[in-house]
Amino acid sequence: MKPQTYSGYLHLDELLSLQQPVTAKPEHDEMLFIVIHQVYELWFKQMLHELDRVRDLLERNATPPALHIFKRILTILKIQVAQLDILETMTPLEFLSFRERLESSSGLESYQFRELEFALGMKNKKHLEPFTEGTEARTRLNTRYHAPSLWDQFLHYLAREGYDIPGEVLDRDVAEPNPSSPEVQQVLVDVYQNNPQIAQLAERLIDLDEGFQEWRYRHVKMAERTIGVKLGTGGTTGVQYLVNTLFKPAFPDLWAIRAAL
Figure (spheres, rainbow, N blue to C red):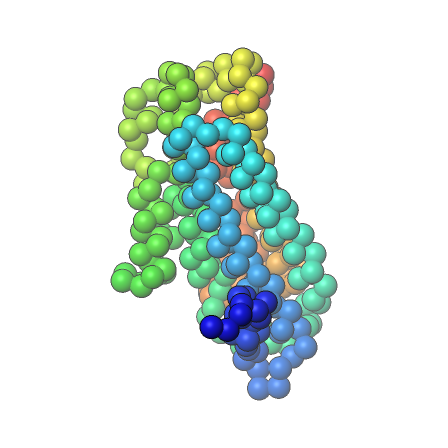
């Protein structure tokens, strides 16, 4: 039996063969574009892995370990935002040198990003449509779409901790976006005023929401800096489409209570 090696454990030969520019004479910056987006997909995979871990911990009301995993998720999110600084070192002309080779491919086809949205509760049935039924992508998205969101899991956690979460909120259709509830907001104010540990958990949720919105904003500005008002790949309206996704919180009740604290 051969001993385990660094290269073998990480499948480096396979991994390093996956950066394949499509231009006949590869443009210098196409390699950067490919690597950045492949790294994003790896971080999306890790974030989904960690969010599933948080779900399991919340189901057991294991608050300290959940806080630890949230810290990891938030650190990964900061790295994802920082990666845009690297992408912005590519000038508009450098991007245009290979952009047409992307043809109809678009970041909208990232099913892991859609999985993240669904996991947070940002559900939109239209986002299932680009993915063909029966494919792995559609199967995974269907599962996330019909599963309770992180917010649903947090509310059930609060109910198990003895807080009076309305039954209609706990039993809602989880395929819908996270709702806003005045009754839940009253519970959250009580949590912040009287239960510091659970309040920390709520703050990690709002950190996650804010970080996700920050990533969207930085992505918009990066796209605007690179392509201006040109149409986006995949037939979208480009920057304008991205602008329309901004400032839409995943957890509206956590934002609504700020004035009451």
